[in-house]
Amino acid sequence: MTSHQIDSKTSDPRPPPNLNETKVRKAISAMKGLGISPEVVKPVLKNLLQLYDGNWELIEEENYRTLADAIFESLDDKKSIAGGSTSSNMNTVIRKKRRQNVQVDDDMVSASKLTSQGVQLDNSSSNSFVKRNPKFHNDSDITRGTEKIKIPIIDEIGLEPPKFLYIPQNISYQNAYVPFSLDRISDDSCCLKCRGDCLSLRVPCACSGETGGEFAYTSQGLLKVDFLNACISMNIEPQNHHLFHCQDCPLEKVMNVHNPEPCKGHLLRKFIKECWRKCGCTMDCGNRVVQRGPTRKLQVFSTKGKGWAVRSAEYLPKGSFICEYVGEILTNTELYKRNKQSRKNERHTYPVYLDADWGSEQVLKDEEALCLDATHFGNVARFINHRCFDSNLIEIPVEVETPDHHYYHIAFFTKRNVDPYEELTWDYGIDFEDVNHPIKAFECQCGSPYCRDVKRKG
Ligand SMILES: C[S@@+](CC[C@H](N)C(=O)[O-])C[C@H]1O[C@@H](n2cnc3c(N)ncnc32)[C@H](O)[C@@H]1O
Image (tube, rainbow, N blue to C red; front, side):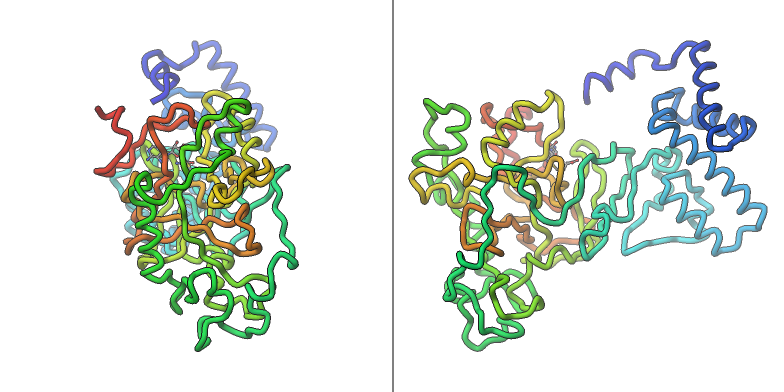
């Protein structure tokens, strides 16, 4: 809980009565601008003030949007009652109310149970807060139509709407060197002559070379179990096994140019290599999974304590592709500067370092040491929360456009079968004791029995 929340509980947030009169006058005048008479405004305003316990801020924000919405709702209600509530116009009223997050009566719900796009709408009559609070930020598609699927955002507790712009693909911020050229893909590491689906070939084509002569995917579009298990086992106990240490670590160098500390190690990861633009196969080829984008019924939903989160409305078998981690491509220096400049309590999503190749070169140029930051621009992955060790997702590097390991994609796959509506999580790899990390670690509420944030609990 923030100190602001504590303060607002201990002191009376309501302004003195004379200020209230001014506020009422201002609200009436704002609604007049929309052609709404004071007689219509007053009863709705009174109800809202009761609902919000006299908190004017909620009514005034966004130019009295909540008040205007509530007035239009009340007018709609009157119209529908005057017209007689048939089952179908009852549905319309509930749907509209739900879309606009306004109170839905129990008898309305029982008159007609709704689901939309496979989304389990909140029809729990016990959730009285949801029902009486018109401040829920639901949206039927957070992707703004940029993905092949719609991803709804479902708010059940009145969470602040996320402030970011949805982008379906990574975008370079400024200095990152991200060269895509046909010339960098040699003819023997692509399948110019393939047609159709490479997975149906008797002898796998050149694109299977990087994964040991076998494709990483099954014909059902899942990651092969052996490949997945090998990736999972590399993530377990990284300290003991699969860490490499670079001679001239970009992370340490950016923090202290003249006297950098020794590299703390980067996890070695297995790569998936998909067929790329130079290949002759079709977009339906089974070796093109990540590049086709998310296809599962994903939802962003609100949690208590962890902010927004991601789940799927359908069952996900082990090895299912969920989504890619999309954000701005920054150099390590740009990220460092950005974090230093950001305001103290600004919320950050966790950046992902593209560090799979940092150890293979003696000195890495700054524009080649890259990371993805989804704080301002990102996709659905920016809502996936952290869980220590036993998360149900794993992140795997994927080559799509370039064999160059300075830039690659990060794709999330399920580590096990996942039930519908189970929260999707991944292990950010945070060391909760590392006070020098560019982003301050949060207090972990992952609930895992293996939670590493022991100091807080101890
Ligand atoms: C990549 S974002 C995930 C989406 C985020 N919950 C939101 O509302 O935008 C990472 C942030 O989510 C929160 N978070 C993620 N996992 C958490 C956990 N296990 N416990 C507490 N907070 C968590 C932290 O604030 C963290 O900085």
